[in-house]
Image (tube, rainbow over all chains, first blue to last red):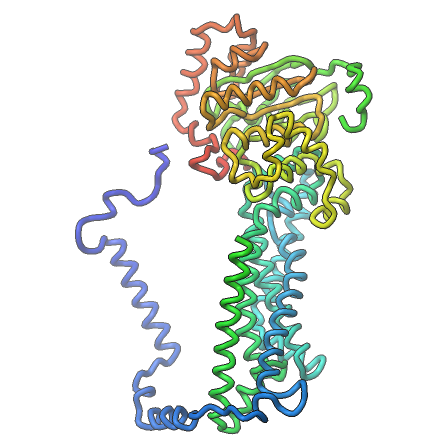
Length: 292
Length: 272
């Protein structure tokens, strides 16, 4: 198969210096960066100005010591206080991710070409069936793109407007946005399965759905589980800002303390988010090891 | 034949024929089979030999109903091939790696389940008895609960055979069941295939000519998608064999078409 080999070969590794192609790539990269920096109004002087320095020093100085009063941490009732907000954030992420998976599984299936109209399941299918499958595929992919392209916090704002303030709006926001993300991931994984395995199962007289469930899906379940866990970690970070629009969780404390210039309380809230992220990281890696 | 178990046990099954009539199959621009005609009868043990990329696998996939011919017909007992009459033992690498041997063998018969039952399987497991029987038949009874990725290549090949046997089909096809195996495992897999069958038509694509001549009673040589000879092992001459494999050698990229362990993705010719 040596004649089919198309990777790098000895000629690409001339001793010392960059090849012409690498040089152009590097130059193009620099140009794109410069352009992007100009668009993003990057101005290092703004960061170094006396005013900016003063503000940041004041912020850090005001933040210490972080607020640790019982009143602030525990509040006056069950659903009150910073610690409750931490728990609420965690709960929003867990329920939100679970709902996202529930939506993502059917959408992922209808967005995978190997499920809808291509590959081993369709070698003997009539052409109208392939056409229908292709239609479903494109429709479903568009839905996923739309869900994904609206940021979680915007979904949060929409749901708060629709059903009112509170963590449930946050749950829905995470569920909808992440259904888009996970659905695309699932679909891409399903398209990347070994067609021979699927054909082997389909060959036993299985229906398409059965061949998908027993031949295609088992090939990707470990990968899907691992990526879903990673996505859950991401939702914790998203959930932490959902409170900005009143969709529950610790974000409420972040935005309130910023507005009231209570930097001590802000620092505590930031530390709480930090703790939450580290904990979820650790938890996810534990679960992943168990799955592995 | 799950719907006619009595006919099978009493040996009163009519002798149906697997017939290829002027079959041509192309993948894109490339011809996999050209004008192939072949008639095979129940009880025969047929080895299809030829160089890599000759069209052996395509022939089997057409017989299994996994592909439809571009022109010509493939029939069994006069009817178009349906899933359950013909079974194809794919290569060992088409198993689901992380699942156990048992669960892979069970997947060989999901077609017999209602679609609701298929969904419930992770919660309400199926009766493993038929699968365990098949595993015992290929000598892997005590490896049933081992994940496939920790089995040897020979064992995987036998699991693939057991999976195919789940259908109780009248025609058993095997695609290179000895690929990537050491000599003793090769013989073992062929012996297993011979031992578990009882009056069914067996068609095996094989790389190793010696095995084919030794264990089968009909040899079909194909190269470049054409049948070069179709005869008994005794009648196969060395000249015919030399010509067969020389014909294949003239197409340089044929080796790349065989999905092998080193290149675990299917060849471009698998689907177009």
